[in-house]
Image (cartoon, rainbow, N blue to C red):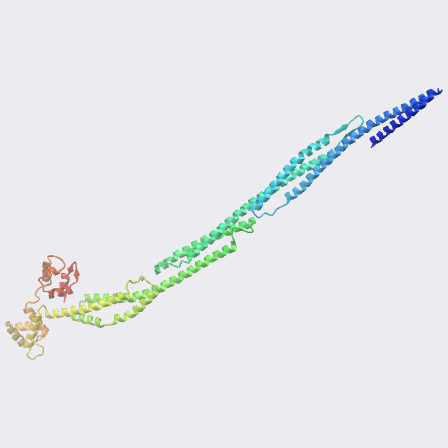
Length: 563
């Protein structure tokens, strides 16, 4: 403005000077031409005016020099102000950037997954990159601009100028450095927080997977153990079932212990997850409630198996009582039959008494009356599905066969005893001889009273070619008539057997004969008995006990002589 004013003045001064100079020169020239007497005064005045204009020109030049200096200085100052404004704008832009980023960096996100944590870390990394890029894009030039502003100086002979707000500029730059430093610090803190959150989410994820695995394993374990507990086979016999009790208790204890450990592991893992902040698990729907329910389900299965075991144990015991009752009755019957058979076979009573006992037993129905009860018991056993009776191997069919065999034995024994009694009565005689003796007794029993007195004895013997004295008759009566004065039929038989020399062989004589026939063997065989009649051989084989490949003649002879 002042320069323009000066320019206008100079222009005006030049115009006035030119106009005045021309007018004055015309006037002065006219005056000089007119020989104006005061022309010198006019020329002097004219020179004075020129001097004045010269002075004005010098003053204008001086003023212009000052104004130019002012313009340059103010231009310098304006540039400083613009640079300072730009510096301020950059700092304000950085402050706004800092405000936005600091707000983000200070914000605490809620993170519930590894993916979220990684996403937040990725966003944070992008923020860090943006901060560093913004730093590179602004701070170096800001520092350069600040340095240029602070170092700029305007200095002339007329005036000087420099930036007077260096303190403010320094404070702005320091604030910028602080803001970037704060953003880096906040970034570091947020990075640590997010990294910790990522680590936490990893632990939470591991916890979720671990709990899901434990829960799945626990469910499979419970299923397997429940299926195993559903197997209610505890053994085939009472002994098996009773012995299984220890194994069952051991299994229940082991299963309970392992179940408890597995449940504790799952619950501990779940509690650890809760303490880590786990609120949901995408890998499983299991929870401590379902785990507890699974444990209760398994406990119920074990209780059910224990109840099934107790039921089976009671069933086996009931079956065993039934089997024992059956065994006692059937063994009693079997042992009774065997005992009776042994008793009959080993009886040392007279043949007549033995025959009487055999006939009584043969007529008895006591054993037959026991069969219906055994049939009922056996039917009950079969209806219960019992296939093995540990108390006996016998069945009703067996004792029926045994009873039938016993009846057959009694019949055979009765026949044998009858035959032996008949043989005994013969006392070694043939039937013809025995009949002849009875005929003679009847013939000489004159009064038919079943007694032969001494005279009748003498007559009988005389008819046989034997003449005896009264003394001999007395001896005969003493020996064969039991010191009576007569002979009964039995006494007469005994006497006749003696006089006919029948039965004179001893036990040893008979055994020696059998030994000779069998060539030293301790048992007899059919091929060595060809000297005996078939009738005699059959009698011996029926009555002699088995021995070796044949029958025992020593035992048979001893039994015969014992009679």
